[in-house]
Amino acid sequence: MNKFAIAVSFIVLIAPGHAQISPKELTLAGTSDCIREAISTSSVEHNGAFVIFSCNAAKAKTLFNFLGRKVPLDVVQDKNGKFENRQFGNNACYHRIEDPGGRPADDFRCDLILTVGDALSD
Image (cartoon, rainbow, N blue to C red):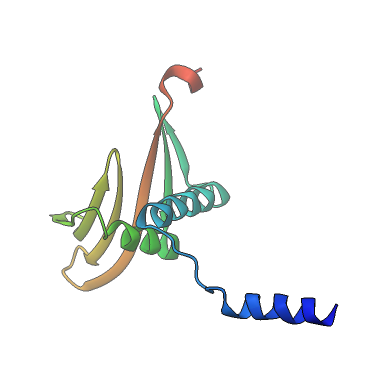
């Protein structure tokens, strides 16, 4: 029995201790976290045939950075400031780098859009 316990301990110690996670899995995990946050903070909008889930701060920053492996960055300036945008499908994550007054900013937001058609209409 002692030899068995020693053998099991040895196998556990030499086995690789890291999981290999692909960028696709990281992005899906970030998307799931964003949707969970949007639901828990009541940041869900029903807009006709769409449901929009919005997350801010840490969850949005994480997803924005995960997307950086595959989704190109577009810099846009509008009345709300200057943004780095990563758009994927109908969805987008934003990093505001300047506020409307031109001062540096560091705000993140993601809007994930689920197309539901007429299923949720009254």
